[in-house]
Picture 1 (cartoon, rainbow, N blue to C red):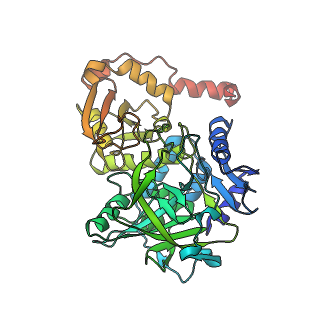
Picture 2 (tube, one colour):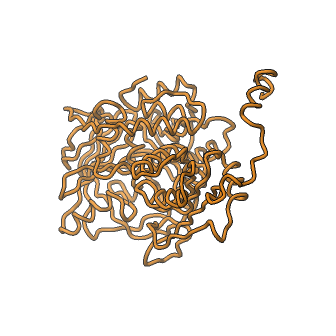
Picture 3 (tube, rainbow, N blue to C red):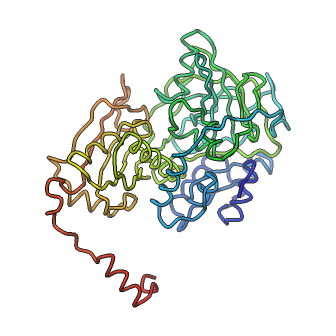
Length: 478
């Protein structure tokens, strides 16, 4: 079920019956509020939400929330089969896919679909697009939340795509917040250290795979374009930005080019972030001076609504980060990993559960330490719990059962200090000089030293279960 651009992707998702269309919402709080309420209270699989006839905007200027917040939409985006028996089966399938990926560099094409409309210089007006105020305490409208920001390393030449938030300050100025240590931050600082402006491009309404990889920790040294191409099995199409020279998604709905000048800042925020708090106050952050904008007629502005979990991008991040951590554990030699789940309640970062079949003393602590500090798990974690293979890490009830019955707090909890934190951590007292945090490593496995003497679990055996189902039929489970 291949697709070429966001509009073809939407047509397929429409066939799934997973699009909710809403007309007449206002960009001020109503779009964001509805997205939050629908995702949190929808009785089934949350739909993608397509807003049209937005107040103060022409019909056809649309905003899309919740792009890949369902298993089928995520599988479609990843070019994978659409149905799985369990969450661990989905994660296992994605992990198998990324184990054999060969990077596919992007292919430069002659034109972009966004060439239908052009603004340059004084004609640039970012208010033409229905950028929302997402949350009631936000410091302003946010132009970029479901997008990618494109930068290039001035020393090594490699290109990064990151989902760094962009506040709409005025008609040609965007706030540009990215956390310390992120690749876009490093690129930007390299230009600043030279006393040079940093060229930046922004793509909104591109193939959802680009926003997906732009918001995740992909392998170090690989461009998100190459990684997305490998997932799709074909090169991503890009055009060369006329102002910046950066490769920009050719199928994007809206394309912005500009530059970030050293020492030029404006107050950015506050913004309700993925941990579920307004954890960071308004503070000076770099800005993008926008010089050029291209967009399709009747453009679709893609938005992402972070909020108190579960929120509309916690699901796909949980799936992808779980697979990445699982893959990294195995690459460094941790044996018999049976599953990983980066729980949505922690925004896919603050709580990671790893299931293993214990093979030796220290196996559980090894798995916990590496999961807490590997590339995909190092940024703003809080808890890593390791459970036995009889626990499905995505089953919260079973995980809590293991924690309450197999953890001796004095013996089985260790603390890592001075680990990689963030300004958006609600436990960081503001203002702060540093943003270190700590990690709790919880061994919720049965003690290895007397593993075979641990009390047996009180439950029906798989053999008896199968006999009962065979005799009485699967209907008894309905």
